[in-house]
Length: 183
Image (cartoon, rainbow, N blue to C red; front, side, top):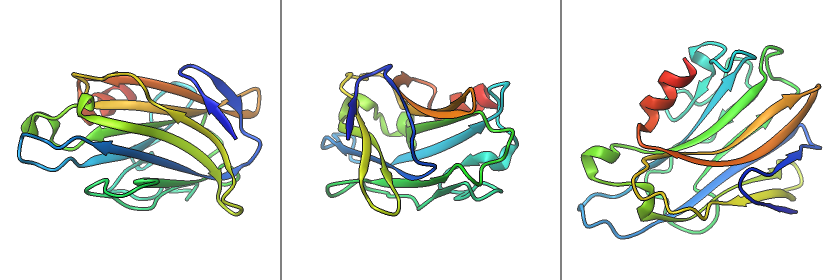
């Protein structure tokens, strides 16, 4: 298993794997629970969504080619381990796909006065879906005190080979910012 640092890239030896995302939240003094949501953007060479259906999230749990399947929304993040999981099968992915962005956003962050500075123990990990063997893990250690969304990582194709990059970049525009960027 490889522990990654921000910006580090590794080749993916497996083509069928699960992306597990996890986090813990501080007790909120806003009186509202945190609801973090994992989303996946499947992009072409132009860094834009292949089509709207290639935006996989809690209201669209699978891509049209079924290469990316979100296992469902966790509304609380309670407990240990992965809070949300995404199954990826690169053997099924649309041939136009070049880049898969993995983003986590805080639902209703502005309304609830929440940000990633109130989130800790955040990680993204990739493990073999069949054997459950963990392949890599990236733990976000930055203090995102004003950001309401974070791009955890990306899976991208370079010279016919799929790789993973630990991104760890926050944004203040939430999910809407990514939708604008990738549409």
